[in-house]
Image (cartoon, rainbow, N blue to C red; front, top):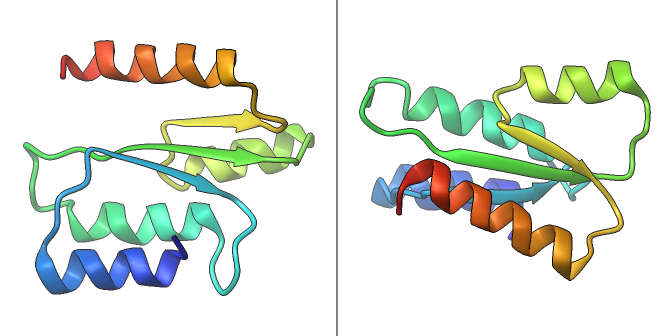
Length: 98
């Protein structure tokens, strides 16, 4: 889904998300900007933390560090393989104890 839609859905319904997987390059809004804004919207809810993962084709370390500084928990390079995605989701679920 596009970033503006996610922000609108959260703001309108106070919908809680446990996990957001995004792409850094999306129409209208970068994935890291969406996560940064969403993190600020839930900042008053200290018990609530959204796990966020972004996929990107960027290979520049400085750019990747900037993206992480926007509030993302993890950034992964494309292409995405089923095996890597499965391992990643397993680690996320274990760390959240869902």
